Image (cartoon, rainbow, N blue to C red):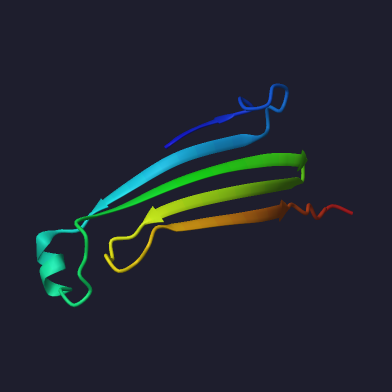
Length: 94
């Protein structure tokens, strides 16, 4: 995985981003046991995200994943998602 803070847009030092790849090897033994599914030897996944600080307490993340399935009968999947994180601080001192 590779990532960083504030590199994509200058002056936005609290934003962070990342790109990662996850290859998975499926052993011959497992493929032999699960012969009914006809599995490929490898599954490949790529993920990219960008987390933007809207305010110090609010962050928005856009996430994209591409997965080339290990199951031969399945197509490559593209999944796009978003997340909104809101932090609440509750004062315990009165």
